[in-house]
Length: 234
Ligand code: UDP
Image 1: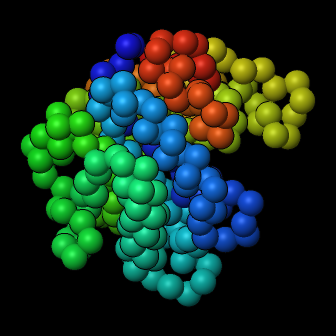
Image 2 (image 1 turned 30 degrees about the vertical axis):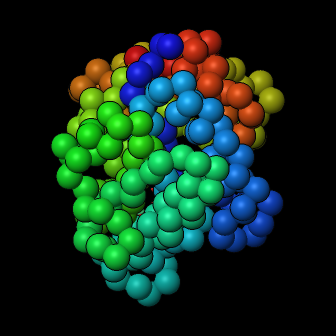
């Protein structure tokens, strides 16, 4: 296998699936099966899920809610998604642990780096909830920092597009996909892959990223096997 320990980032928005809001169970079920397939290979899997299907702190600025308060609401939204995913994973027999960036002891363990690594070594899927537990960050930054902390081999950013393009493929039919691209070229071309904090953390710590289509069954396992799926940023 090409990778031994991975950090999978899923956006909250992807969980909406065919619904207008909230969580589409079919989506969670599909994702859980894909994740189980790689866990069965002995791959150590850590997961960060966003909260955009429920709440984003940035929305608070137009809704009269204080920004910092809004960010904590966003972090709570991620915990809801994490709990839903945990439930689906456990239903199909995966051992999991949910670790939170802030204290919410009734439903999550606190994030302790050494504990997280120990869980992974025991082949438990580790889900990181509540982001970094601090406002003004995103779950992409959470994915980058947690991946560095647990010494993951790669960040796999599952999206609804199949990689990084030179322009938005959902808007322009002439958009060209990169099979791989360096961190420096991403800066030069001003491509939007993650927010700058998240992206810079990966670059400065030589942590590669693969952006890929998580909705295509089998993609995740193919990446683990070393097949060229999505876009590699190195
Ligand atoms: N958030 C935060 N600190 C963190 C992680 C998340 O304040 O460390 C808040 C922030 O308001 C963000 C929201 O949680 O908008 C939901 O996460 P995100 O927008 O990253 O979710 P995604 O876009 O991946 O669905």
